[in-house]
Amino acid sequence: MSDKSKSNFGGLKNSELIFMSFIMKDVFETYEEIIDQKGVSNRLTLPDGSFLESFKSLDDESLEELTTSKRYSYIISIHEKLNNVSTLVQESFPEIYEEIEEMFSNSEDGKNNIL
Image (tube, rainbow, N blue to C red):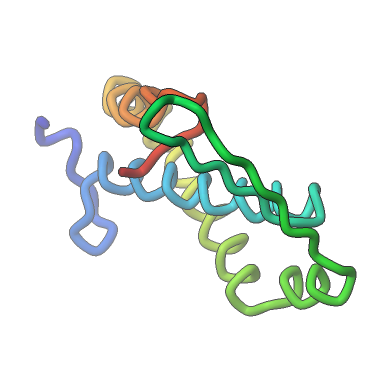
């Protein structure tokens, strides 16, 4: 990466900030999906290509605990802040943004994959 990828955000490069914003977006969207579906779904792919799916419903009390937790509050706050920074970097250095975006969009199931 060129010098353009450097920033003054605690030594993090613009590319690293964008990378973290994509990770936080995944975490945020996972929480939102759990809240919208009122439960947690899990899909296990077996070696033969078949899969098992399960769903655990969450009652209203569990959903309330989730949405009022400090963890969820931090996730929302960090996601919003990193998203704003990522947008600024995207406007200034679109090639850096596109490189990281491609990394996250190359996934088999259409969902971003951090591994």
